[in-house]
Image (cartoon, rainbow, N blue to C red; front, side, top):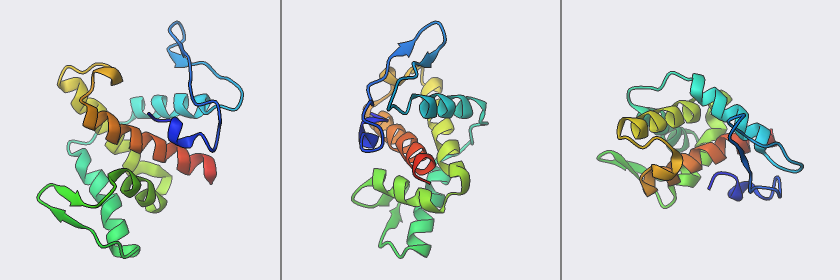
Length: 143
């Protein structure tokens, strides 16, 4: 879910997990190293209490600086594609810090609900976390 959208950057997007090393195996034309480094970075990140605030900062950037016609209604952004919002908002996110913190917060929330790995996460949270991780890697690889 994370690397397939980036297959135009590296065609080898199906990775193998090395149980002994607890990392994805590095292979030619893959983003395994990028994903491994990101997982390590997120693991060292202090998760925010309110990770939605970090995602909101990306949306506010698009609304204010890029003139996107979006609004927050209640606790949700009224936009056709939340994944695109995260990706495009990342252009204004220095070092992808909001995306990294939001990802760490989403992971902490999943763990708090007893979802100890990605496959156990609620489908909507899997999708949004995947969007965030893909966006981080995209911004770092294409710069």
